[in-house]
Image (cartoon, rainbow, N blue to C red; front, top):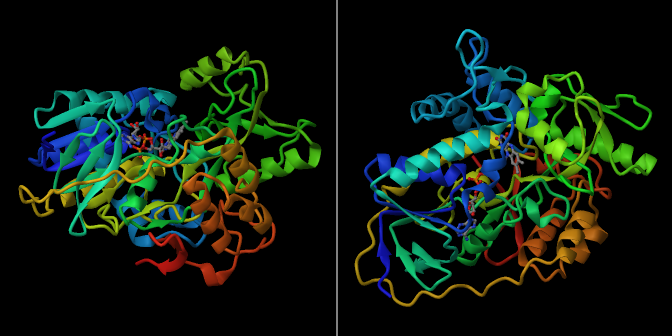
Length: 483
Ligand SMILES: Cc1cc2nc3c(=O)[nH]c(=O)nc-3n(C[C@H](O)[C@H](O)[C@H](O)COP(=O)(O)OP(=O)(O)OC[C@H]3O[C@@H](n4cnc5c(N)ncnc54)[C@H](O)[C@@H]3O)c2cc1C
């Protein structure tokens, strides 16, 4: 079969992939966008909180940077966080020009929400808690109409084509090939590897394995964020995320005696750990979120989802418990999304720029998708063209074994909110390769920092400050300090 030839191949149609494809096409590139699943199955579609950007008159990118660095617990790559905070305001303006209708206040100015860890109101929303849905719908409509973007929907990338050490395209599950000077992986995160998760079922880190098989280094796989407030309702709606913005508007967390036990707007790792401790001390399977004083009209899709799960948040307390939510680690990249393999890029949640450190600040990930999606698109267009006839026979790497409920449960038990050597050691025999890589990375970080809490190493070790755990293609962990 003759391969399809294009300038840039983008794999994944969440926020990062859609925006990267649009940016490359706006800059004159021919783009092929490959998406395995329909839109509604991307994590981006479900994003509720919003997009963080220092837009308020009394805010500044430098302040946003301070909050990001402080939440990240000494593991933030400051250069990447600075790029994010400086460029996010312009991205919000660009999205508005592209037709995304952000929520406005009574005077018609952007309404800015407050979320955990932010010292200022700086989170823009579209349709209240329907931000992800609104943004991905608008961007996908633009992508579908764009004459320079070819969309291959329902097609899965199963291998990265490497010729003479350079990435030269992707192999698809049906045996067809897309050849291009650059490939941008935007395949999303891996939090659905854990048994209890807020993520759609496809978010199992397939892109990380593709990149790793092609020789790209992965980084910080031990740093997985647990969201404090996912619904705990075994009869429907379990794992549904209740956005931090609701706590920003005054919702309270209560223990079994109806008492508050944590600052609801502390960074996520602290709140998740506080909830986990209440649960283990009391044997309860959840704590309560009291959102009875919050205006339900501000969060219509949350209210509807809770009602569908049989909970009336205007009258009842909502049972919540932490769930795996966001992979801070991923494919190691520079500030333009370049992986360690020439021509192979990664953006969005599958990438690890190091900007989130050991604890992502709420709503920084959508900003990351757009800021780094745009940068990667520009850099990808500068890659040298592939010469015709150089392709040869490209083989897909062996398919990893299917992810089983047993592997997911094992990750939850042994690499959950708290871990230790004995449990992590058990995961090294798991059939799923990403589970083993996560265990090795978590074993290597013999300290507790942000989302990575070791029972056997409960303290932060200053020697790890600024260090990233790299998993090279050899599979052995190594430490690196990034600038
Ligand atoms: C419930 C929920 C709420 C959230 N709320 C917020 C929020 O308010 N603010 C915020 O900043 N962040 C939020 N996040 C996190 C944020 O939504 C994600 O980090 C971000 O959307 C990830 O976007 P992405 O484009 O990288 O990946 P995704 O949106 O996950 O998209 C990945 C895409 O890649 C495709 N794909 C994967 N593998 C392949 C393959 N091999 N071949 C072809 N296609 C493939 C998938 O089908 C999908 O289209 C939330 C996450 C969740 C789950």
